[in-house]
Length: 158
Length: 158
DNA sequence: CAGTATCCCCCCTGATACTG
DNA sequence: CAGTATCAGGGGGGATACTG
Image (cartoon, rainbow over all chains, first blue to last red; front, side, top):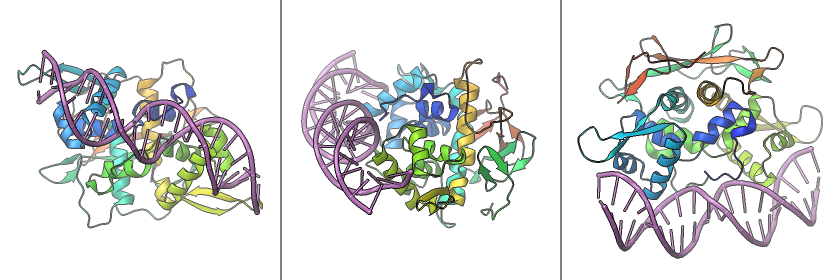
């Protein structure tokens, strides 16, 4: 986790989230889980991560309640790692990261792949941010000191 | 960044996002920026981060186009760090993390603080995940192999 | 205040070898 | 296949001192 200070008790929800899934590999593991990975080797090959590190991360994530293990579905004697309800709750986080990259980090002609419908090649979910009054907000609306001020600046291409 | 392997060219948008803001401190720095921090010392005191580490992170984030520097607004000779449009685009990511923590990581009676309206003590934004056809999805809807199947499992208390 | 420069330790990380 | 055990290294991270 690279951390000497736990963020768990900071009181800030963002910090607490990062305390659980803020390390370098966790979200990628979880991403692969959303993409269907369940077996140790699936995670390992998909990520190019060392076995030791993966085992450690998986153990942490199970401990934290993100994954749970269950018997292999194909009858073999091995375990599978499946997301718990808490883990599935991270779906918006993954989608938000994907969306940000697609909006801000990719050149228009570059290849993208993850969490897309493989048949149709389209993203399967989009995010919307809404203010408490239910009004939809563009991500480019400026956020200053806890108050959303609708500025409607130039928006990235949908 | 703790990384030996850059994820930038993986083709996966999630990986690319993490390549930019996936390290231990970046998202916390960005969170504080959304909360109004602009000065070096504000970040440093708010995070309890070492000056060297903070300077390094800030430099990286400016390089990556998340922050930009500008002259101090109070007339002093110092720089301020403000989010670029790209940086402000991370708002949904922060909100998603906050929301996940609040839904899954906090006991009902625990204190929370971040990105809330300080006067009224309420969250200023909520996220919604929508499928491409515009249908709203609960975060507990199960995501399997790139297809969202509406399962409507038990939902965490709103 | 806003950093830069050092020192140093810890632990993450990766590779390899081994077990069931 | 699914891990565990062990080892070596490297860079992140904290603390401190120094500068403009």
